[in-house]
Image (cartoon, rainbow, N blue to C red; front, side):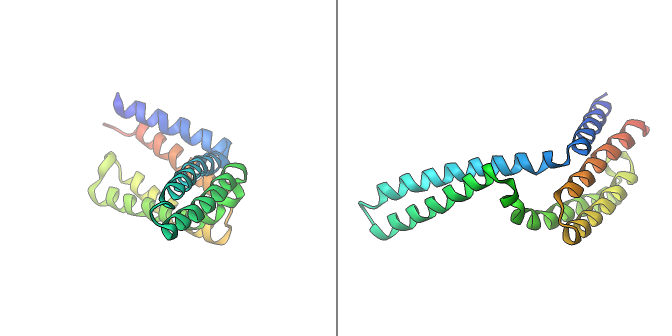
Length: 159
């Protein structure tokens, strides 16, 4: 029963991401923006407090706080600004998919080697499409397909 529930959740998530591919990038940008914004506020407050003890450290913290505030606000209100981080995440996500796929094929974890093979293929496609097309829409579609197909495989394979 737990496997069926997990499969249905993957299918639903896959369909959501396929229908709205930016859904994976925009919330990440906004959440990261708020985290960096809070970091900036903390650095500013720490810098102001620190100036009394060490002027150099206080100025450094204030400068970093201002930079973090600008980045945080930029990520919140302009998710396109976030795209430079997507370039790095393309490699990380692709490698995660490839490594987890290879591990699934070797160990036959999850009950089916097809999930592992699928993860390896999607991981390679993710890196290639991310590097050459650099369009988050296509990357979102790939993740949606991976979730959907993995959920379907899990749903129909024998326990």
